[in-house]
Amino acid sequence: MDPRLAPLFAPFSLRDLKLANRIVMAPMTRGYSPHGVPTDEVAAYYRRRAEAGVGLIITEGVGVDHPAALGGSGVDGDNAPHMYGSAALDGWRHVVDEIHAAGGAVMPQLWHQGVMREMGTGPHPEVASVRPSGIWGPLDKTAMVSPDYLANIAQKPGRPMTDEEVVDVIEAFARSARWAMDVGFDGIAIHGAHGYMVDDFLWEGTNQRNDRWGGDHIGRAAFAVELIKAIRREIGPEPVINFRFSQWKQQDIHARLAETPEQLGEILGPIADAGVDIFDASQRYFDKAEFAGSPLNLAGWAKKLTGKAGQTVGGVGLSSGVYDSRKDGGSGAALANVHKVAERLADGEFDLVGVGRALLHDPAWPRRIREGDTLLPYDEASRHVLTLNWRGKNGKSRWLAGTTPRTDH
Image (cartoon, rainbow, N blue to C red; front, side):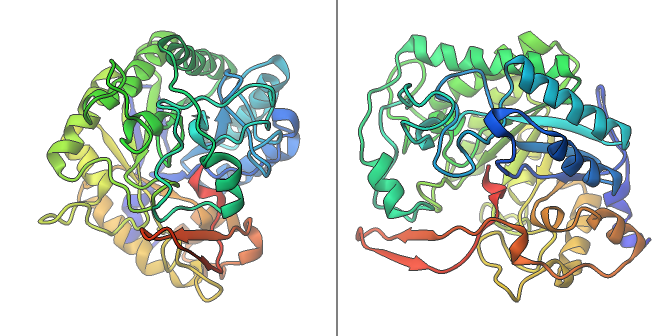
């Protein structure tokens, strides 16, 4: 093995979580669980990554036990997995057993789509979607959705969630977390990014409440704080909780939760104190400095400000970022990025490294890296093809022909 890559293959230990290395499979929605139930094929898909040396697998988004958690006309509809009901839990038990048999560890990414859910779809199409302030978000920003989607969902106003409805969602996460631990998972991952429910409370674009769940950026963190406390109550003190967050949103790719390190600390600090152990900082490029005056990326700042472990992600296994690679991009040209991220890992900027598309394309990616084998050129056919609609501040739209993987979920 190239000694420069040794930091990636150093073991990691945090309470009862023991990992063989620092490589984490990033969560990527797939939509291959009919009626929410993971199949043998799902188990085999994850096992292949564990067999090749992924230290920790974080599953695709898994719907929590709330009727408005999931929906969508594509892979996010009836084929997205959930974490409730005997059939789904049995399916996940098989997935966990297969990953453990291959020497890996796994966490489910618990997920509620929040304002992004399309009404009239999903396991409970009769149920209305729930939104913190009844709004989808600003309609004049650079968004990652199509005009058809906007016409179907974003411009249909709802009503603010009642306090009882807010608590119901929190308790749904807690129940699903408990069931996940009963199934045998090695910890819990929470999707708190990209404009979904937890992020809907964190971001002022979707949370304009003035009660206990809103106000300023500190008040908007109250939902995440209470959610983590509820999960910790259900799973106990030892299992590790991983919390994914992001500055950008699907409603506004340029959105920011925090403009300064001080603001970020005020948001993440209470969430850390509530029981989070690892902050999975989702950003477009792992090597982009988050704030002026420091080379630290978002994961580095999360670690510095909270004292908790940091997990980076963003184009690690490719030659260009998550929204910019085309047919000429690919993992075959990305070894320089792997060297960069290993160097920063060795310096202690963060503790874990998330890899998405490279692992989606090539299950053996960790083994190739470790053994010095040639990396496979990235194959666009290995991911779902989406179209991005970029909406400018003037309200006009233009189409960018391109693709993005389902790493955003």
